[in-house]
Image (cartoon, rainbow, N blue to C red; front, side, top):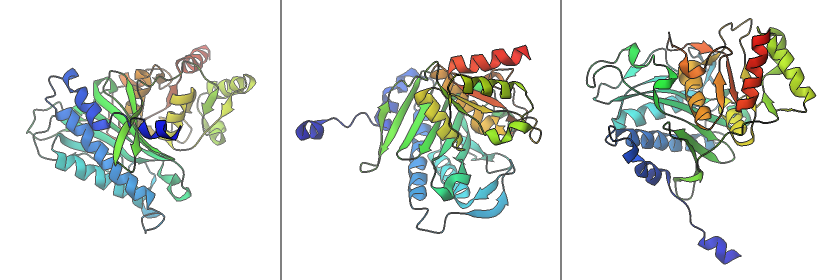
Length: 332
């Protein structure tokens, strides 16, 4: 028994996996592969910072708010710096737009791609040691490489993404990504310092018994369908699971099946989740895994962005659950 465990193969590393898929993108000439490796490297650094957060003075608020009005944590800013530096030095990203900055950063190189990123999602959970994450989208720039970046390089529909992914920093650290040809998950092996393929060709169950929503805001939700839907979920024996870290909630539902709901409210009539930094990436991942993502009336990936920090309601998860919600919404 012990011998067989010792002899077990470690599995394919992220770096080798990316290289093995490089031929699927002959026009990328390796730049996309290198860009994904740069993001993976930065996530390892952020993972290290998170793991030692309780030992050094990098937890707590800094007394500022980001563009979404959220109180910035020290680790929010640190994660933004780590990813920005890795992408800038890597040279494949022409620029970056982050949830933590007002506008985009032009790296002034000849890169073909731009990155939209939420460096540390769920940061309000940092101080209480709950899972948090990173969400990223990669697009081909619209302007000519080597010229000045403009907003139109970033204001692209989710269908234009060439890759998207998230990193979950939890009981184990995972990187999940797609390039539009299925979804694969990699677990960080700390002793090797490598991400190893642990969840090949991930599939979101088509149905499930979990709903994720902040029910404390029920009276503020603009759409009366939500209350009726939740009432039906309870009658059908669903379980409520809401972590408050978007990546963690989505990842759980990807594995076990379920639906995540973030409706519009009286305070946030256009929703609160950011289209470019959160929704587009997660929608692409979930749809590539067989699920659905909608704003209640339209597919998330087909929404036309009109601002760098545009927000939207989002209903995402198992196909049958999202379809059920949307069908009830049409009957109202």
